[in-house]
Length: 136
Image 1 (cartoon, rainbow, N blue to C red):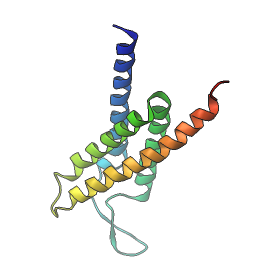
Image 2: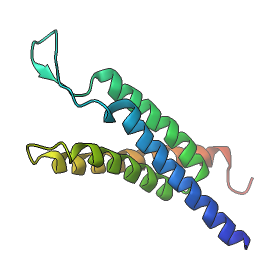
Image 3: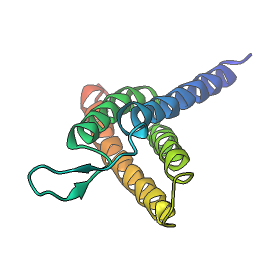
């Protein structure tokens, strides 16, 4: 196996691991919760996700991104995270959809993850450039 093939295989393995880690963030924080609750402050139905679940998910995704953008090309890392998280969300939202709006949620999650991945990728790339200046 040549170095190029080894590098490609290694990158592919890391991309799959990144997608799996992003999916795990969904399932560990929000994928299991389908129950709405009554907000004690307002008395209105809310949810199904509580603020702490969203915070845990975002922190988990940031941790995955920190590693992924360090090890992979930013485009590969962003695509892997976006696809892993969106497919996980879709697999839990679409089967339980009674309203027909789950696909709207899937599209919103897809665009939000893509945008967040681009922003985090830009920050990570800029940070990496500061650590390894060209010509130094």
